[in-house]
Length: 121
Image (cartoon, rainbow, N blue to C red; front, side):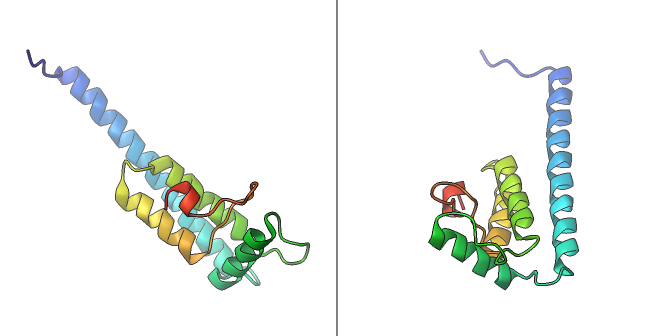
């Protein structure tokens, strides 16, 4: 009554897992490169991003002109992309993305703006 997968099916499954991990790692390296690029940008910091996103959340929409911090939206977009990709299938990666989102105080545009809790963090 128990049918075991054939060697071909096992090989295909392993290949899919490897491809998924490779995709996830590529995404992670993109995020790390993005963090490094913005770390040297003028005005960019976790504190500045947290302040900007607090304003966005308070206003319920985009921050006023001149109050945006270059790089914050991009970093948080990558955080969300990583969290969406891993979902709950790989808790360590999901937790990593949530921790980075918390560091930068990520909030995403919407009506009302989405918070880390809204994406499952």
